[in-house]
Length: 140
Image (cartoon, rainbow, N blue to C red):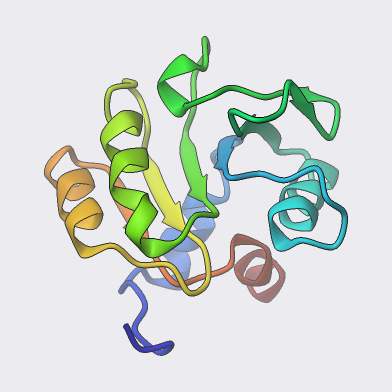
């Protein structure tokens, strides 16, 4: 994948996505300074409901952590993925088991074509190779 290879969502579509407030963050970390910690923290500070998804931790940034997206007992709009591209497919396969997910967001440097196609077949929007924090700062 090339770094300039990103999805073709327009700025208007991205702005609409940011109106969704429940975001499951897969691979979220309790370690300060890691993108998988400061990016969700940024979103929390802007009023988003962040649901950590990391089987190693009980809680991250004061929020209960779940082993996988399908274990979350309430509504999720966006699944934001901080995993290597080759580890994304099982995350997306699990996420689509949960009804109501509108967007799969693969962070900067992450793209899995097969995962993208599976999500799109279920009418789930896909964003890849973009940072949810940087895009938010750019648009707002």
